[in-house]
Structure formats: C-alpha cells, structure tokens
Length: 559
Image (cartoon, rainbow, N blue to C red; front, side, top):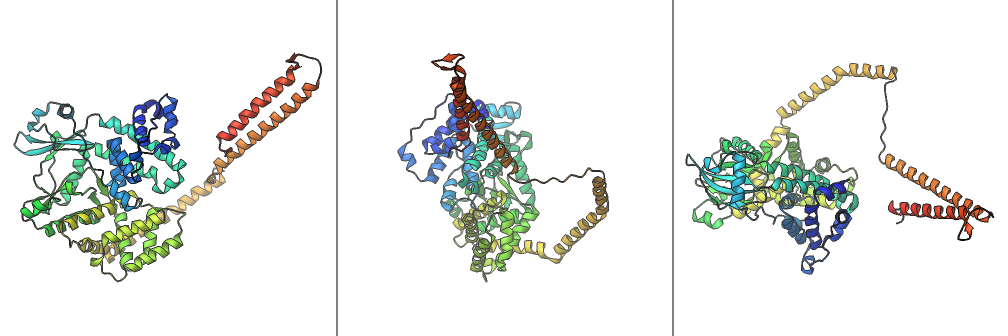
C-alpha cells in the first residue's frame, strides 16, 4: 500500500532522492527499501552509473554530501542526527555537524510575494525600508533586514516559498523508509530509525511555524527578565505569522569572532561564564532550553551582554527527567554504580540488554571518577564516555536527553574557544547543588511523601467500589480474561498457510493419480493420440504445481 501511495503521489520527488542515493553508492539500500521497484512499476528507471570518486569517499562523507543534495528536509535530518551522540561515533557526529543552515538564497521577487501573503498587504505598508539582499539564507527560511515606520531596526524571517509541500512529501518518504528499514535491515534497528524520524517530524513541523519560534523566544526572555546580561530580540507580533516573523535586529559581535572581541577589549572569560550559566539555567532550572547554541546564534553586545537568537530548535525536560539527570550525576559522584545503571536502563528501555555486563562496565566507569570533586569533573569527557558505553551495548537515549548531551558538548567547545581554561563542570556545580537540594532535601522528600500518601488514600477509598464492580461482572458472566501472546497471530497465519499448501499438494497428487488412470482407459475423446481427459488432468496438475512452487518461493521458503 505504501509503495503504491509513494508511486502515485511523490513520484517526482522519489526519483530525485533515489537518484542521489544511487549516485553516492547507496543503490543497494534503494533496492532493498523497495523504492526501485516502486519506480519501475510506473515506468521510471533509476540511473545506475556510479561515480567512482564519490563511492571512494568515506561512508560518513558520502552520507553528508547526499543529505546536502537531497534538500532542506534532509539537511535538517542530518542536523538532528548530529545530536544523537548516543547512536553515532564521533567521526559521524563531526560530519553531520558540518551540515549548516546555509542554503542558496531565493530571488527577492519570490520573497516579496511570500511577505505579501503573510501580511495580507504589500510589505511596504509594514516597513519603511526593506533590504532586497538577504542577511542570511537557511534551509527553511530567509532573513532580510528592514526598518519599521517608527525607525526601529528589525529583521524579517520569511519561510521559503513552496517549502511546505516538499517537506511534507519528504516526511512521507522518510516515514516509509524508516519503517521498511527496521524490517529489512536488522543491523539498523539499534539506530531506531522510526523513532528518529518521529523526533525529526515533530522538530521540523515546529520549525515551519515561524510564529512558534517567537513564542519560544518570549518564554526564554521571561525567564531572564531580571538578568541584564542576557538579551533576547523583541518580537513584533502585528507582523508575525506562521509564514514570517519580525524581531529586533541584533547589532553585535559574533561570539566566534575572537579577533573582533579582542579588538573591542571584551573579557572573553566573563562571556564564557555568562553563556554557560545561561544555558545551564535553561536546562537544569527551567527545563526549556535553546537546542542550537552554535556560535552563529550568539552575539556579544556592549556591557559584556550576550544576545541569543534563533529559537527554532528548542529542547524540553520535564521535572521528572531533570530529577533523573541529577540522580545520574549524584550516582557518579557517590560511586553508586547501581543507581547509574538503573537510570540508564530506565532511559533506554531495552528488555534484552545484558544487565550484568552493563553493570560491570558502569562500575568501571564510575570508579574512574571516584574521589573527583564535582567542580573538577571533565563534564564533556564524562558525557562522551557515557554515550560510548551506551553504543557498545547497542542502547539509545531518549531524544530529549541526546539533545541535552549535544548542547552540553557544544557549550563546552564554545566556552573553550573563548577561554582555554573554561571548566564546564565548575560552572554547573551551583546548579547541580541546587537541583540536588531541591530533589533530596527534607522539604522535597516530605512533598513527595505527602503526594504518595494522597494517591494511596485515593486508591484505598475507591478499592471497595472497584471490587464490587468486579464481583458483579463475574456473577453476571460479563467478566472476560484477555490474554495476548506475542507472535501468536503470525504463527497462526503460518500454520494456516502450511495447511493450505498441504491440502493443495494432496489435490495435485490426486489429480495426477486420477489422470494416470484416465490415460489407461480406452475409448472416449482424444487429443494428439492421447485420452483427452487424462491429458487435461496432467496439464491442470502441472499448472497447479507451478503455482504452488511459486507461492512457496515468494514467501521465503525457497531460500
């Protein structure tokens, strides 16, 4: 069914994507996913000419370049994969991280038309001046400087014209490919392709709504309302919609421009501390954080202030998840390998993991950090070791935690570029102590105990009524016991198919025996000198036998 839908609705896009994959040496993947067959069914032929210089590249480079050619959706997919440090080794993460938002710019005429649709009138009614040259061009949107009629300098971020239908087609194809990959490629199951695509779909759909980015920005701005060191661009809601948003223009020094920072006599150590404290507050206190704090999204303003822009990609952590992160760090510091193992198993949700070996490996890992004060922990190195340990056991983290680790690693790298002596763990120490106090302090324990007592009292209060309902159902014959056994329906289908084949074989054998007897009977109609009914029986038996062999081969029995 999926293949038919793809062939009829997304044929053009499918042919383009499959051609790129084949050209980069992934033709076998295309065929095993069934995409080549879907194209052939509607008369399309994949180009099979491989370019030797492309195939000779390392696999991670070929994947990255293929994603770049496949367009905005797949560039975004690569950026999501760059956050999955628990699934991919460092060389793959480094290659995925090279997928930047930069993209060819769209002609201003098309952007002008998109602005007109977003505003409901010509852009000139909203802007006193609009720069036709883009300030930046990304895979989803394009940014232009402008000036409002009150004189305020702003930037208008406009969604690329026609981008939504392309992305919707790509998401359909990705959903199909991920589900097929989990069935066809057992070696890929540990990468959880369906889960990754689900995470990617949710992230990309949110990014298409440019008004949502502004809501994220205002939420972060409210969190730092009393902190003058952090600046978030103000949103101009009268001109903001799903297709376009308008925010204050930030005129600052990019945090990665070390020469400009030194020329402006900026205290880089202070900037590194301020940035780290801001992101740690968002993660460990607010549970809502900027998920892409790369150097292009952070600017230094006069007065040692930091401006953070582009809240299209954000991460969320529930209070329960933050408590688990604190529990993990507490277990590391206290050399409690059992606690660490329990948290990791809770995160990964894998019933088939070798818990004994995992506990041994975690015990060795924890012992490595035994006795190290919290302020001296190499946080980045520790997180990398945890993800490497998970990969060795073929375990994967939930998407929010993988994103959290990626942000921490990015923050560590950004801090060290500003200050070679930057210590991420030292900056995290007060936040972790505060979180541990909030989680393990008497007040928090008493609050959780009171909540548990209320839940238990509620359960006890309703227990008699629930028991009466159960007994009434049993007496009335309305109680049913439903037992579901995994794989039983599939086993039943296999038995049914086997019985049908056996019955068919018996019918064919009987037909052959009957035809043999008919061939010995003299008289009656004949064909080619042979009794007609005997010959007809042999032909029928032959055709039925061929059909039976073909059905066995198609079901895999021929292997």
